[in-house]
Length: 512
Image (cartoon, rainbow, N blue to C red; front, top):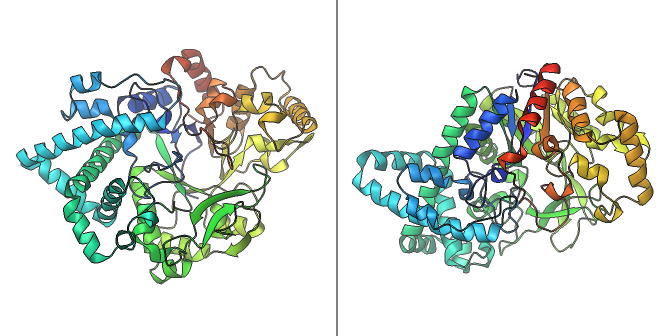
């Protein structure tokens, strides 16, 4: 396992941060969050994938595995840079404090980002130093930035439709059509590149501040990519697609704790033979880029590197699928050959885990995950998820972005979770109260205390659990459609008393 001292932290996606422009940003509010973490004695900030989101706003269905989400660009930082003016920001309408309205927010922010990009590009024309910095960025990131900027520009020209619904010559990357688009969409392409310049410059400042405070950033890589992404459009040969660019088979998971019909994610599956033939170069680039931004990477759905659930694209659910083996050993050996033996990876090994998955993880020295919520069920404790049983080499959680909050889990009824009967709900509550030995009034703190006291090298809780919030504040419900990923908080919700209690628990457990 990669080296890290006994430590703890909070799971919070940047989009959930406070701020007046409709969504959490990576400017002053994110720096304030780092200061809060430091005051609480926390050494870890875990977040979800940072890429630009498409339909549904899921960070796990990104338009690029390499780009940053322009919705997170700080408008206050752009004002400080002189590309947005105070009078511009005064025109931005009020947005809800506790929820992201993605459609309205993106519409407004896109207009002001376009204005900022236009001013910035004009400044580049008048400032050799600024022009050099921008050109150096574009050259350094050219391997992914050229395709991404072209993808976004053409997508905009085609009303936002998925790439396989564009005119065929553009969808199939006909050289003459692409050359024509480069000329026709030059302005849009340059604006996309400018957005990425803004994002990565702001992110570098945030990452540097985290390092000053001794806080490690934990990022997240979805194992699969979205079909409607620059990744698949630029390299269709690396994915299982038909002659029209549509997926032949798609990814998901079979029926499990979260869903009776499984989860049909819809991501195209990798053509692993093509990746192996190139020495896994695409994966090396992907991991290397992510580790430029963060210090540790959680890889979502790690079990897919041992075997993945293959679903025919025509199937409406994940029920009718099959397990197919994957070249996990060859991939991780290639990654270690590029980055050294101790790659800072956390393996998300939840769900249906067979011995081959555990063996793969242990062979390559990746810590797995333990989620305390999974310890409780029909009047019994699941031995693997009881905090007293956690090994040193794991990352322990009260819950994750896919779980209900601790208070939500305890207080939810049958209608809110179709996988549990009334008897199961009551049995789970009895088990929780029996384990904690409490009346349940402070249950979120009981969970945090138990996870923090465990032997697990790293302990993490979602901010919602620190605040004791209910189901209305959960981030996502796997396998369901709905208004997810939109939760936000305000600074007054994170009281000095909460911060002091978190610091005390952290000090008592030896994690500071």
